[in-house]
Length: 269
Image 1 (tube, helix red, strand yellow):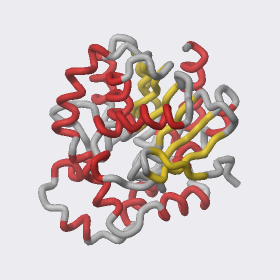
Image 2 (spheres, helix red, strand yellow; image 1 turned 60 degrees about the vertical axis):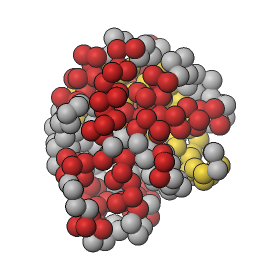
Image 3 (tube, helix red, strand yellow; image 1 turned 90 degrees about the vertical axis):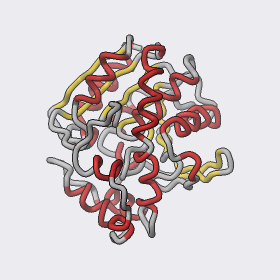
Image 4 (cartoon, helix red, strand yellow; image 1 turned 120 degrees about the vertical axis):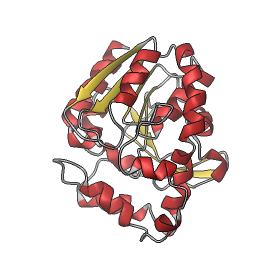
C-alpha cells in the first residue's frame, strides 16, 4: 500500500495531478520520465519525516494534462514557478530529477529567489548533448515512425525492466503504465528533442544561478552519463555533486542513499 494518494488541481487551465504528505508543503517534488509522482514511493516516508511534501506530475507527463507549448525545458521552467504559486508555496525546496533538471534550472534563472534550494540530476545538461541509450536516439532520430509503431506500454516496460535492484510495487508499475496510452510517449518526446537548442540557452544562464543546488547522479547511469552532472557542478557557483552507486533511476535503485542526501541537504539549507 502506497503513502501517495493522488488528486487533481487546475493550473493555468490544465488538470495537474499531485499528492501531499501534509498541509503547508515546504518541498516540491517533480515527476521524472517515463514515470510519475509514484517515483517517490520508495523515498516518500523518509522525505516526509523532514519536510511537508507536495509531488506533482509535470504537464504532459505522468497523469497531468499535456499542452504542446510547454514541451520544452524553458517553458516547463516557467510552469514550475506557476506550480509553486498555485499551491502558495513559500520558497520551497524543489526536487526535480531527470527531465526536471533543466526545467528547474530555467526556473531558478527566471525567478532567482523563488526556491530555497534545488535537488536535480540524472538529466541532460550538456551542449552538444552527451546522452546514452536510448535517450540519445529519442533526441536525435530524424524519423519518429518506429516510435509511433510501439505499443503504448512498450517504452515504460523497457524502462522499468532497466531499474536495478528494486522491485516496483504493483501499484507503482500500474500507475506508470496507465500514464502512457495512445501516442502520449511520442508527444512527450518533443520535450527532450528540444534539448540541443534549449541546453545551449541554459548553458549561458548557469553562471548567474545563485540558488543552492544539490546534484545527484547514478555512477552507472548509461542513459544520462555523470558527465552531465559534472558539467553543472563546474558551472554552478553554489552547488554540490554526489555520485551514487546506482544506474539511471537512482531515486528507486538506491532510495535510502538518495533520501539521505536530500534530507541532509534540506537540513543544511
